Image (cartoon, rainbow, N blue to C red; front, top):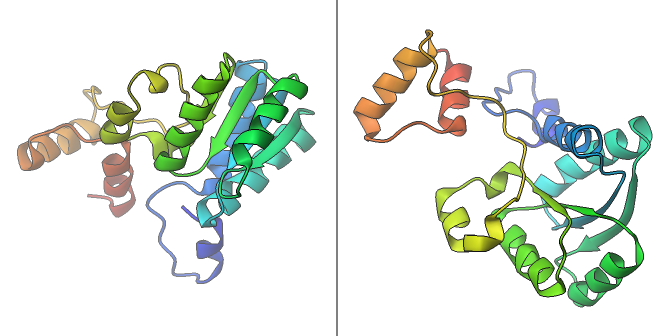
Length: 186
């Protein structure tokens, strides 16, 4: 999903939407659908973050007029203290956790310890049965953008794909399987 990968070759074949689209979608959802104008941004330090964060800020701040009130880098020592200060002083009622699932769960634990009652948005990296199970009650109410996929559709090619997938793997396909299938065109 890293945006720069497609710039390296005209022969690049993406099977999942770009991180840029993910950042743009998260910003629009927070601002337009949830009415959140100020957010605290929690982020890791990896290629995934570098793909999402600039697109999120461009859409949230430049296009929509929102404000990223604080950025907390969870890979730096003392991030919990900086986070507590940001939560207390910024007036932000929402957070966006840009990172992989393990980082997100760590931030969720911290937010619970701080008594943060605001809206929490994560990345689709949080969308994993294992991660959500491990997070337990911390996962309740966490929002994350996912490309659409309705596995209950009775229309082709979705119906045929879902049936073949279930016959092969004995479980329902998720959005990642569906996008891989769609990209390969059968």
